[in-house]
Structures are given as C-alpha cells and as structure tokens.
Image (cartoon, rainbow, N blue to C red; front, side):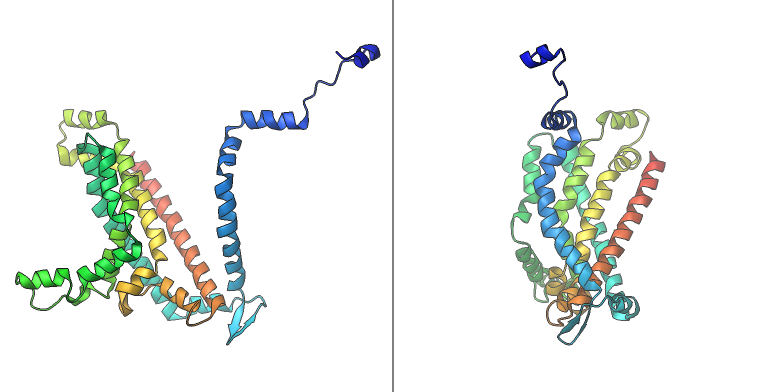
Length: 310
C-alpha cells in the first residue's frame, strides 16, 4: 500500500490497466492467437484479392461503347450474359469439361494414393515426393509436352500407327475437349493425390481387420469400409480440381482448338483483343457465382450421402 493511500485510509486501485486486460484476453483466447498468426496472410488476401475483386464487381455494372466507358449503374452486361447463346454455350462447355476433368483426375489419383497409404510401409515421404516430381516443372512445359504426345504426328499416334492399330492419326486427341481433359487431369493430379492420401492414411486399420474377420473379401471390404471412409478426401479433391479448372484458359488455348475453348478464354479476350472490360467483368462474376452455387450444392449432396453411409 502506498503512503498516500495509507494516509487516505483507502485501498489502491486494483483494476488492471487496458493493456493488461488485452494481454490477459490474448493469452486466454486460442482463436485470437490463431488469427494473429493468420493476419499476414489475411492482409495479403485483402490487398491482392478482395480489392481487385471489388473493382471487378463494380466495373461489371458499367457499360462500354467503343473506347468510351460509362460509369452509370447498369445491368445490361448481366442481361447480355443471360440472353446471348454463345455465353451460355461456353459456360456449359466449361462446366462439363471441368466436371470430366475432376472425375478423371480422382480416378487416376485414387489408386496411387491407395497404394502409398496401404502398401508402402517404408519411406512414404519419398514416395509422395516422387509422385509430385513431375509438377516441379513449369505448367506451360507440361502442356507443351502433352501437345508433343497427343499431336497428329505425336508420340501416341506414331506409336499406334507403327504397331498397326490405326492407319490414320486420331484427330480427336489434339485440339479437342478430350485433349483439354487429359492435359488438365495430369496437370492437377497432385492436388487430388494429397487429400485422398491423407483420408486413406487416417482410416483405422482395425476396421479393415474386423471386416475381414466377418468374412468380407478385399473388394467387398474396400467398397464397404475403405471407400466410404475416404470420401471426405475424394470430395475435397473433386472441389480442388473442379473450381480452378473452370477458370483455366492456358490449356484450352494451347490444346483445345475451336471446340475446346472455355469461358475463361472469352473473358481473357474481353480484357485483351475485344477490349470490353465491363462485359468481361460481368462474365467473370457470373461464372464465379455459378461455380460457387454448384460447389455448395455438391457439398450439400455429398454430406447427405456421407451421413447416410455413416
């Protein structure tokens, strides 16, 4: 007790200072410590993502005539997106190609993840690194490599003709939606392998032993135990592949040809040769909204299915 407080016959103020209360709250709140760790990333996202996205949304309500941009609020761009058949056709094609790509990627990734999770008992990290080794190269180099493989005089056509299986090069292999699906499936395979592998690795092996004790064979045990328990990884992989590939424009431009062009190619043209940024912004915003709705419906349906299986 201080001398002044003793002389006054009163107790000193025991209330903690504002800084002390903040320190105590910070030390007690685990969530606040987590947000603090995330703050640099959140700051970069707010600066590099949210601000440009807000500008794009704002611009989508503007109109352009020639080189003149009118900043008057208008829904004309969205009306054009909804009414013009070319936009709808490209959007539907983009969704179909990305859907096939997501399914194909999961189908080729699941066996690899399954093998590493269940049949590799030593040096798993090395196996995972080896699976991702092709992705250490440039994305463009991988796309050009597929042009060499799928081209009219490429590795695949030349090999099939040399063994007598075909007489003419298979034209659908390059500059087609098939080429886009094949190239995207390979380009994004690593992003599907990792979540599937994690979900497979977390499966309790005693459940598989119990299924075997109850008379299930390997196939029946897989469909009754392994596959249902690995569905969270499969669902995550499908979303990780579907969402970004809808907006991919490099692969369709290089191997898609006229029949393989997607909505992102049109958006890129709107910001380039066609020089209509407001309409390009409306196309981009419309596509993001539709993809978000599809993803939400997909998650809702898969949760229902997983809940029933569980």
